[in-house]
Length: 281
Ligand SMILES: [Zn+2]
Image (cartoon, rainbow, N blue to C red; front, side, top):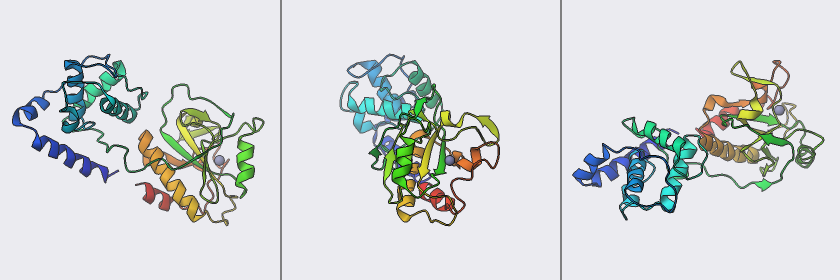
């Protein structure tokens, strides 16, 4: 995260420096246009939106200087990125919620959540293996990642069990011994991995708010997690953390959130948390 701030702010400074004096002055009075703009729209309100997106660091001067306010793919992409960072539905439509968030962002003197397009982590390749064991999050935002061990060293068996409707268990992802990542449940859906729980001591429906990752390991504390697993897990967790703005303290083990305390011990005690945290910092 810390690496991203200087790079963006230097880009921001550079674009400001190149802009004519009058444009720079105008930029300081940029405001959010009224809600109700979408792809295909054009005109002064779209231009106003683009200037606002430049101000908060989601578009560059170069991107918006090409014409008088046309809501094209670049503007839509910027709106979506902004929505994702503000944990809003990423519709690309500039509606009431996005208007409110943009207004708030403009109220601060510097870009509040500057991002580089795509960020530092890209989503690793996943093998789709859908599980029926899922339901709606009911509108709850994702703010937690929970790590598990599967309690066997047999990824094929674990995968099959989590895809069996009778098991009534699942996770969003399973990282096999060879580092292959299987996606069983879409991030937007609620997987059934955590059971009764709490977060930092506060009782909570963990499944509602979290992404669950099962790491194939018997949990004995003696079976090493493999190099390939750490590598895949770092990329996957880094990406999810970035994508959903998840604070480091909310990247936890099942043991940390399960109640009553001691009900679960996963991931196993030999799991190298420091290595993961370092990798995703
Ligand atoms: Zn677990």
